[in-house]
Image 1 (cartoon, rainbow, N blue to C red):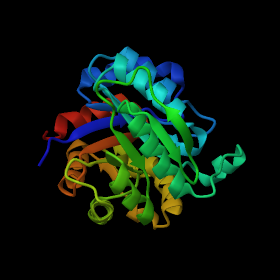
Image 2 (tube, rainbow, N blue to C red):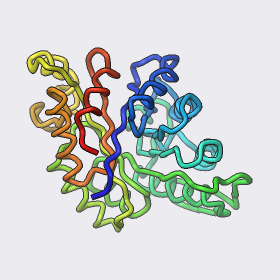
Image 3 (cartoon, one colour):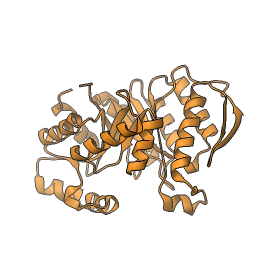
Image 4 (spheres, rainbow, N blue to C red):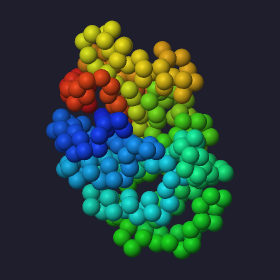
Length: 290
């Protein structure tokens, strides 16, 4: 079993000016990763990643996730290449379909989300490897583009996807998969099977977001999590009580992280709710066997 990476999300609702200090403190506590969010009307993922990388020395920073419809593959590759050259080995780039309603809101919803995501990941990956790319796809068209400054170490491209056909796509073309909050150990077994069906090998990473709340009072933990698991359960189409969380006291939270690891997670990224997220992170890191 590979070493588990434990990361922390910088929540989209937190002001961007707080990101540098948060990233530095998370690094000092021993977190392996910090993941930033790109949702329409919140913060830009590439710019937030640049802020976090510039504020730290060791921390790996993930973009979770860049919506493919909002991003020209050539421009996205240029942005990622810049970060990967300046901060080699410290970037993970998540790319996903984007929320359909948001993509429609800004007039970029594709005819075929599956084709767009596959063509985007394929094109961005080839550009980052220094290849000259020509692609006449269903959604993406590129004619002879080659990066002048490709990175010596291309960052892994991970697909942020949920549905079965998208998971197979990720197994086929991405370096890893990013799983949204609420998915537990039982889900990961099925997800691994779908990734393998798409062709994912042993090197394909499985990165899992998880709502997290750590405290000594079980009732207070439950109250704090309730609005998050309620809304997310509706999005996932499952009862609220089946929305997986990393929660409880520090030992209990560590046990739930261990269950994700045993089911195939390579990285667990904690999305803390409630007060003092860095204190909660410190408690979890102190309780997890790594």
